[in-house]
Amino acid sequence: MHLLTKVNGLVASMTATFAGGAAFAQSLPEVLPIIGAPEPGGVSLQPAATGLAEQVVFLDNFLLWIIGFISLFVLGLLVWVILRHNARANPTPAKFSHHTPIEITWTLVPLAILVFIGAFSLPVLFNQQEIPEADVVIKATGNQWNWSYEYPGEDIEFSSFMLQRDELEEYGYSQDEYLLATDTAVVVPTGQNIVVQVTASDVIHAWAIPAFGVKQDGVPGRLAELWFNVTPGMEGIYFGQCSELCGLNHAFMPITVMAVTPDEYEAWLASGGTDFASLMDGSINRVELAAVE
Image (cartoon, rainbow, N blue to C red):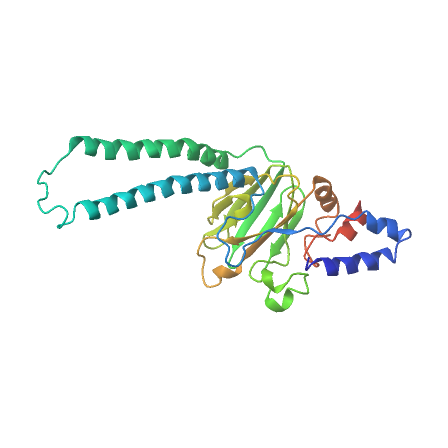
């Protein structure tokens, strides 16, 4: 809601300059919400905005139940051994050194658990690594300490820098988005396969968006790929970070992605990627977008 006031001001100023301004303003969509962002004191994963992220969340919960059960089982064994086999309760300890059935059991049971976990985790890994045919291709290049982006075939290129504290309000953000918000954003359509080619110009960086369930190292001289498909209805602003230690200002090269509807994305392409990539109001400038359409 902290973005709504400024955008409402933009709507009001634009409707005053166009004939039939009231009807024009009513047709404008609401401001994009900030969905993919960390929360102070939060312990849960960010909302899953892609199928990949949904699989990651499922796998995380699945493994949590398994490791929780194992931890309780081991704790129970420790308590049982402490109570049953201390010097007072068991003054004459057994002196055997091997127990074949137990040794077979503690070898086969963990192996079976690992196979069981692998049956669920390997499909998730393969789904992440098997890159589908792309509807949109974006090249992300990590630099010390910012990101550069290209949309091959669309003649759209820009660099993305972290906003300083005194710049956040100017761009429509609040102080809560410090270390997260950037002066430009990657724009992607929902419901389409997005392939991001990741590389670096100097040292190793990593392009990561937690809400998308993606993370890929960018290595100088190499071109790696990741993919995601933002679920329709999850239009919004998502934040990520460089996730590979890359030098002095590693903590100051965030990533901002704006997921929009396919129609809005096409209108953005038609404008040359200039209407709301800059996020001067912290969201899509829906007024300018409507004018383009």
